[in-house]
Image (cartoon, rainbow, N blue to C red):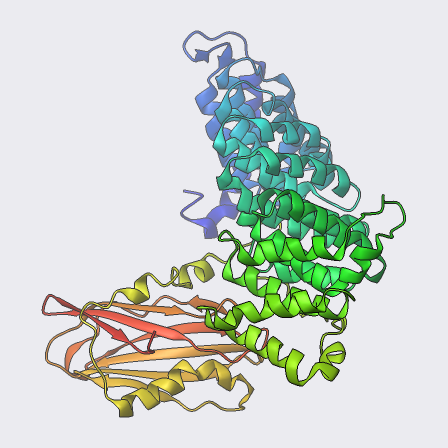
Length: 561
């Protein structure tokens, strides 16, 4: 009754003293064979009373005050050797969390959950970790006292417990314990299953960026992650690390030496190789000098540096992006290595006939630089200026404590798979393609004050219209409203809209107003797309519709793949 009629909840506050008295009698009463379970008097009634107290005390100070004493008695007097007692204690903890309880009582609740972590029952440990994760925001210091026990749960054999422990560890990271926690999490990253590596690496990146005590520690931590789990890190990890390195002037010699040594040992982690190759291209002269305080000098020759880069360039294991990094790095070294210009010219010219267009174009341009603009080469290949940090670092949903917008994730079209399903694709005329270009290129109009509405599709009885509205709070946010109408004599069922944007954008699809487009223009289906262009990049949006009419499915690609 209290759950279904919250507006009348105040009327039930008068029963709080009676509930408290009943619960106290159950705790203090002697043995009752009719209701005793494992030495606890009527545990089912105790659980129900605790749940009712939780509802009544959630928003009432006076009722919460009346409950504090009895909740403390339940927490201290309940036997924990049996699951019956643990169930009552768990309900007590939930009640303490929900009502306006005293700080001492909340600390007691956290301590109960800490004892649960030592229980042999996996279900109890999982419940404890989940509850602590909910309490960490309001009772951070109390949860911190059980940090060592929580870290021990990272070695648990149960996958669910490992994941909850990992999430809780990231929530416990702060400026005072970041070194110790990162050490434990990096060890976990070394030994965990592949399914954990991506989330763990992202969490370490975010925590290190927020709480890093200094730049050297920050860079060392990210390099350690790339060395351990480079294949599992986010796509933006390479530019983020390059940004950090470029702004750490005093550490350039140290960084390039560490990265050179790392890729000589293992060149399989492509993000690590990309960062290392970029650094060698920028700071190759510092690598050759072998000078950095606090570190043993690295003795390396020009030929050894070029051998490593050419090996990466020729390796079948190297991604195309990695090879592009390597080719540019070799070219940059032509102004940093005094005695290897001829070798670099030959290495670059080989790729002038590469089957890959991007590599071929770069090689041809670099060769032309040698032959016709050699006097400009030192100026063109000098070190890059400091890279300015953008307003946003990484995806909108990336956060340490997991505040992820689920609708945003649902809005992304998985890879190119669904766009490649070309069954029943309707053809369209060249005149229609020009209007499609407006839709596909609408993200480029973020700098335009007003964007006119567009009729994106008007064939076979289906009419699709886009209207646009920019957010007043954020000029980089664009709301796109799709309106679909049907002029045929039969309904179009199973209306589905799918959209995809480049990685530099953020896309969120709202729920459509319906799944059926009514016949003879008797109604319409509307759906809103929210697009964030935080980096102000010109690009395309790909939109595909799927409908079913007379049992036949049809795809409507509103932008060519």
